[in-house]
Image (spheres, rainbow, N blue to C red):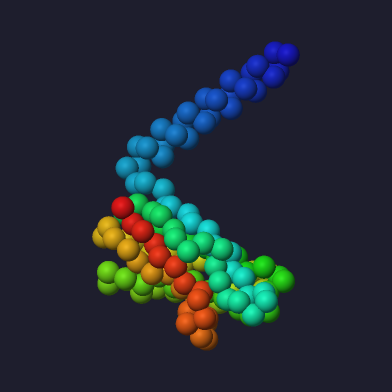
Length: 127
């Protein structure tokens, strides 16, 4: 029983130190947003039409399930930003990292082939 109490106390102390180090750096952690690609049944789409983030560093990761037939990617565009991930083959993931300095609405979409035109797109609202 003493060992459990000691281990718990050490874990709490370590978590507190880690939290202080993160706050002391003065840099907020990057926001991580997730999308899932789907191309089944002849429809190309992401599982979300709208994403939300705050001004700052943002990482969007697209997961392309192994059941899909095509590669997919994600691109962010708007307010002077245009950046895309590498292509993710079925069963893989790809990420795009950007620093969003302006509030407002950006667009995200799949830049592969005609996927955007087929409906694989959405909006990223930054506050």
